[in-house]
Length: 68
Image 1: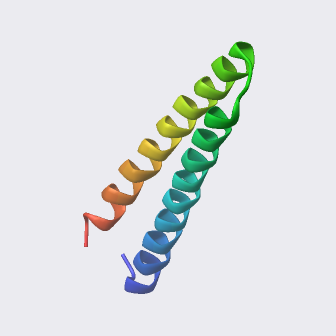
Image 2: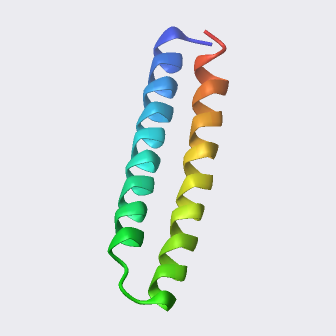
């Protein structure tokens, strides 16, 4: 693979992971701020979903960066 393409791929994967990690933080803050049980349940579900997306992004980053 071309080194420039590899660098772009790693940069894109890193940016995806950073975005996903930020979403985890945002979802956690939303959960902490929830004032009703129904909102808290939904916020926690969103937090868990964000964690799953962050884990997927981390796996992708590792797969790309681990090949260098």
